[in-house]
Image (tube, rainbow, N blue to C red):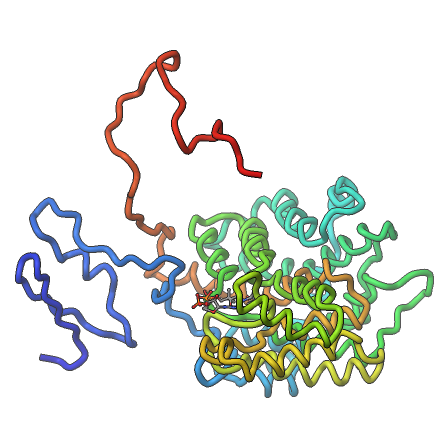
Length: 441
Ligand code: ACO
């Protein structure tokens, strides 16, 4: 028998089954053939939160969580961050190879010439309350772009897909900047095609009456490297959402809005905003030991710590610490940095965190840098969304082209009652567990 097989015995029937093992996985559908009788549905795999389920094959991002390795298309993240520009890497992630000089020129031209938003977007934006969260405005606005580009739903047409990919990568900074300016009551700023991707973003955020915006080169490069570090991270919550919604052949603007909604959660991309709030709450280094005690007692989580995949260190967090030095060299040190460093120092020696393999993740230091550059905490996840859009689109495209993929549809284990009789309304008595029960306040 081939060594690359798995043999299981069903003790209910004493029957033995042998399945191939390929790439360290067995196919869940092979188990469907394990039945106790002809009309048995067959065995299913139960995996809440997809802790041990590979949902696709992918060529895009490689992560080795135990060794702290992250590669895009086989290139280590540190080399990419040091040697390449954001648009160069977006090309790599989308097309699989680093561009030649002429391919890059063409790509930069294309993205630069899709940064304008349709004027209706301004009207959508104006409909939001002055204090609306920028992330909610961004999610709603990108969804609204589906009304501007209804033909985008023709997802089996490669040229059409590429056009939407260019538009989305180009327009996300414009939407992000618009939501930021809206929250401040400032007029929107149009893109400037002379500037690089991040410089133009800074222009749309911060230009006031000056005729030409001049970005600080250190801050522009820091923002660019932060964007590079956030571009893709294989099958995380938001990317899986992108693939799942996309599997229904939904318009890609709606897919990106769905993925961004997943990213907004505090356990995912929303964690960077929460880290800043946590550091504010801690207030000073003296309060760090008490805060750590609270975390260990289960009162709260140490935000920006822990990761489903990285169990040694997050390579992005290491690179971000270096960027922090560059940024603080220009802006001065963020006073919260000392609290963050002390939290990290204590946590990394404490058995609670060490035994659970909890290390600083990408969100632990990014918020401090963003804040020092001049962003409000509400903008942090918006900043994450801009580059992650590239990863979502690459994964979406890969999913569409994958002949093994179909509409995503997990199974469930039904645990509720069956075959009940409907009692007429007048005869029903109050049940326990309904919304009429008093709510504990
Ligand atoms: N602070 C304190 N304890 C934690 C933390 C934390 N940040 N993270 C995990 N733990 C504990 C859990 O309580 C659990 O303890 P137990 O075994 O005693 O029950 C153990 O560590 C394992 O944690 P899980 O929740 O099972 O780990 P999971 O892989 O499901 O969660 C997650 C990963 C969501 C990132 C989690 O570590 C977390 O909530 N971190 C804080 C939020 C955060 O920073 N999210 C950003 C992640 S990076 C990103 O999405 C871009």
